[in-house]
Length: 452
Image 1 (cartoon, one colour):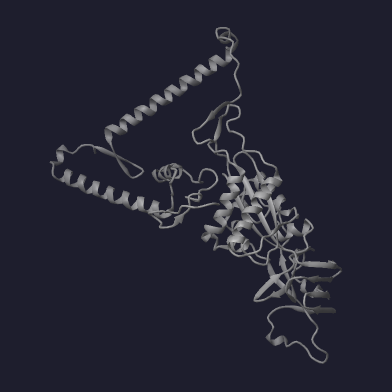
Image 2 (cartoon, helix red, strand yellow):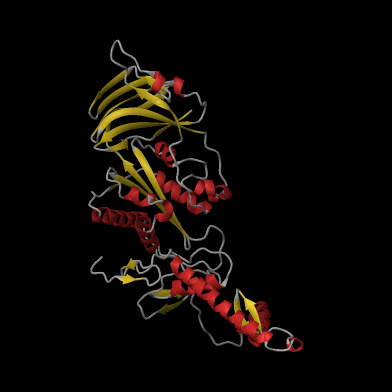
């Protein structure tokens, strides 16, 4: 990133470098209405050094309340100092809690009325010209019109004034591989700066499928529109390790005529920065996922249009060399392989209901906007106890079955078990998690879903 000059926000007391002077969203901030507070936010947001942090807005609100109270007190004293018969209409009106002189408010209303009339006249004139273009064009010189008029601004960025038909400029075009490589570079920069090994780019397509689903159906969630969770999609796409997902979205979820054109790379950089440095609202879960020392791969999904971008990071723990991948048939679960990470501990099963189709409203609701889990605990596969001994079930508050084959030596394993007693919840999705111990960490080596 080169040399950085750090600046301090005088309201929130946080420091930002000259590159990330403000962690702005990629595109206009999402808010409803057009209150004075909204307009102040946008005004700050557009300033070169603007930092519309919550403490600033709180400062503005308190300052505004103080001024408003002073004004009301002064107005009250003025009214009480005059005979009641002379007090007719107030000399001010209040708009968004702000006192505005009555005469100025009337002038503003007149300006608005004139503007509306002017717009109507323009529309009528435009319609008449359009319907009589053949006559009008005969009076014009022979001029050829380009589709766009190119403008070069003084800070070396080129923008385009779009025609009425296009409304929005097209975003910068990159290949999917270019964007994935850029996202991987940012991820590994954050990992390296925190003393972690870089991750490799994975080839599981579940992340890309989910990004395309989000951009097409305008939502942000770990659940897909088909009701699936990340590990279910990962399994269906051929994944045999385990994954943990981060997801992000730029743009409005509903139609917004004033949405701005995005630059995909800028959006990706913003999301990476916010997930690592501004993730308190998510209890730093995105940051912890990016900086998990046990991850060795990341599958990246990116989908975008001119005003929206969906970004998915499926971090993967892929350490097993399989001689017999996980298989299930008629109640029998079997697996065999060698893990290069940790020592095998046990096998757990987790249960989810069969996924059902979800609408956009469902996916934007509170339940589907948060973190996801592996489902409900269904039970465990345990090693058979030594000959002549047994498990003391009085102290066990979970279901379990004993493996008919349990050969575990460090990272090598060969396990077979009848899991039928653990499928008591009926049809649904049962996810097999092979747990290993790596130092003080419990690591899930698999998140393999079985659809029953």
